Image 1 (cartoon, rainbow, N blue to C red):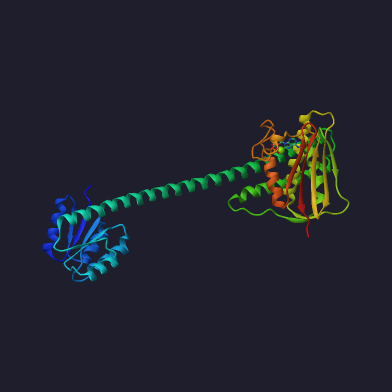
Image 2 (cartoon, protein in one colour):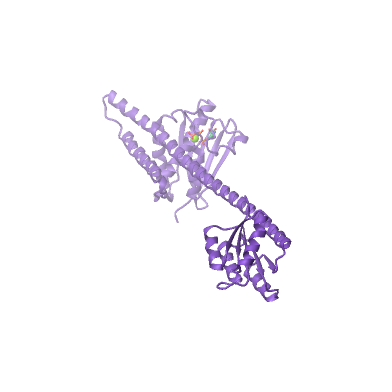
Length: 375
Ligand SMILES: Nc1ncnc2c1ncn2[C@@H]1O[C@H](COP(=O)(O)OP(=O)(O)OP(=O)(O)O)[C@@H](O)[C@H]1O
Ligand SMILES: [Mg+2]
């Protein structure tokens, strides 16, 4: 497509001459006779180059050039043409942002060379600008795709973690329902402890449902001041009802004095549940006749220390790094999703503690973590 050139000159003879010279070279020329008309034309459609008379009635060439710079920046090259051979005019033109300056009478060859060079430069700049814009757009698109993917991934992890706990709770429910059924079959009333466990499971269910509900507007967990010792027994009782730890001997060791902490009960019980189930699974895998899972709470260096130790199968050294990865599991899919330790680690970090693991293959593992005491 031919380059479009706007010629602005109040002198009709000069304007026609310029227009003829330029059209003969194959450019598409538009002629106007003053600055106002020039700006109106540019408003309608920005040309590729402007040839501008310096001395005009109304807006001077310098004034028009300033307006062009304001409207189009440096994208639109401007060539000044003037009868005045004086330096002051050249200086004013340069200051107004002119790209070239030609004196009348106009030398055709000089005009052509300057116009061609300016157009070449302009098209090259346009091409680069276009490329930059395209890259910027692509980058923006990539960024938003990435953001969406990240959001989806964290949504997936969140849904996975809630599903994971719902599965554990469902298994506890099954266990309790079995016990209640058994009582009915034997014509006696169900154990009140079993019925109490239903309360706990319901509380957990509601807490996880709230978490799901608040996905669009995350809320912090409800934390309270409590004696950490009180959370162990109900959790272990619940797990025993679930049946998954029937094969192990549970040992619990608690300190004599209260261990005051400021914590979310549901979250702490979630951590304990996951670690104990893992320990029990490990004992089962070791196929030892008598395996135990030992849970202990102590206070050291002004922090609560929790330990869950098992004499299960242990963890090979090369797997120690990976057990915290989401979806890393060595269990069949109906038993393990591999999210347990990922969740446990992030919850312990949230408590203000650190989760550690020590393990010897074929002997057992110890998971431990600390958390701050309530001041
Ligand atoms: N106490 C342990 N002894 C031996 N291996 C363990 C122990 N705890 C975790 N592991 C290993 O780490 C893996 C990941 O544990 P994690 O709790 O994250 O997932 P999972 O137990 O497989 O599945 P789930 O999501 O149901 O908890 C386990 O599959 C197991 O191989
Ligand atoms: Mg697990």
